[in-house]
Image (cartoon, rainbow, N blue to C red):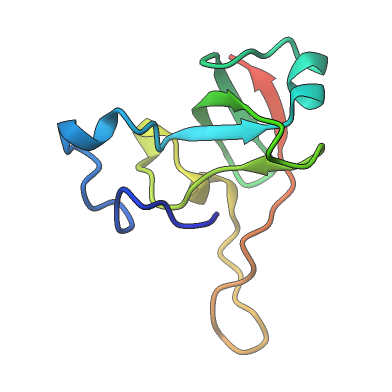
Length: 107
């Protein structure tokens, strides 16, 4: 869940001038999108054992097959990566890495 240039955590989520940047997107490779019948702009559901969240699909050659990119900081009702993460801490008592397995489906 890398950061986005258009907000700090959930700050600016409702700034109308920034909404056009589409920060609640899930970016996936064209091969993965085609296998699921997903096109740019479709609504997609990401889910795993921790939860689920809905995003707008962005199909891009700029991401590796098998990887889904979701920026950090969304609110649950708008699509939030934190709905898909666990709450376990690392051995050093801080947050774990920003990688989790998810299933992607057209919603």
